[in-house]
Image (cartoon, rainbow, N blue to C red; front, top):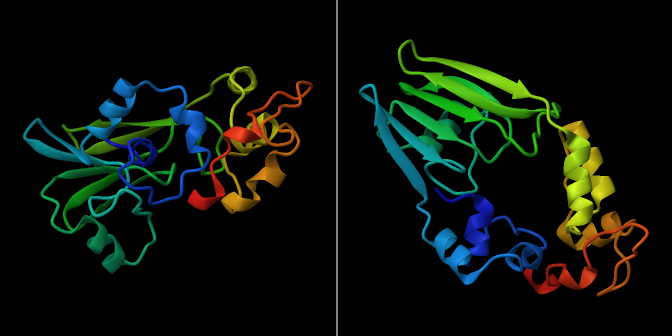
Length: 210
């Protein structure tokens, strides 16, 4: 099943303006990109007589989202026409579970970058026997992740990345302003400050695509 960035990597459209695209695609083979291009928008399965519909965003759009508290008509529009008992969605990096129009709507959260002010990795367990959902959180070695980001010359400032991971949140920054955010670790275009390893700014995404 395709994720949001997968669409951009495989040139299937870039609805969210995924930044620093070249940093990711540079480490992928033609086979990798071909695989991503072939991923379906949704995945469906049946278990214990119940139908499951999995999508990255919502059944309506790859970058769509549902959250508890949204107006009922907005939620209805996002899941309209979906024939399923369970709709499992993502995109928001926030856990939730509620029922709407006879369907159980679930977001398991994010394993790698939670955005609900809780830094821990998130997942969910669905019980088809009683219809319950258990939301779980697991601590992980955050500093090891940041160290790997430095080693791989991650496209974002590792220092910024650490703080965002730790906070379980990041303030949205327009992509054309990201160079200032990453300036602490990234030197002039095409160079790297080796005392503060980061991704070369020559690999930043072209401004024309921002």
